[in-house]
Image (tube, rainbow over all chains, first blue to last red):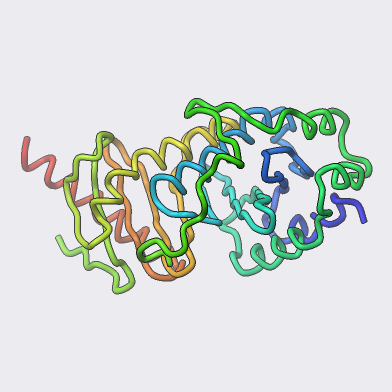
Length: 161
Length: 108
């Protein structure tokens, strides 16, 4: 099964524009976003998603899920197995239960290595493969984050448990 | 002006971009004030990357609690609440905005 087919579990939910998946190093494994979104946005979006997770973890608590509301769109982010992140763009407030189940299924079924994920991407749009193989460390305005340098995830953090 | 705090709201805060608190309640309020402007900025950056502009709200979904952040005008509104039913809390924060408007006009 290609990754695009795997992501149809999410994309077939009502109000969903498309989705994407990043590995722990911020490499794009798959994306199915439709217009008005273009794959060129990932050059900026990926480091910012990584920054969001790292910054919230450092300054607040380790968090797996975010919902960000914009004018007319919602961005749902879920980080799961092997620190992979699934992002879902929708035009209406997402059904959290359905999204969580779909994201968990995808995160479980994704191939172990990014390389095999890239091979499984089937007919992914041209140009994505090159992006997926970019250097694992990405720079943001807040500095450079390397997964290996990240502190251990604390066990329990106040009310967040 | 009546703006009852929903039962599931554990803490809430209204602060400015520097984290200076105008209204607050609950044990997590101070911590929230320190981070609210930063979270809103991070969300805005995601919106910019996607061509969507600034974020209207950010929900940070913990295992038992959700944190809701909203930027309105010069102020940042945040609440920590149990569960993830956000609608009632959004209404409450909208009410806080009205309270803030009253406070501002009283000062003038």
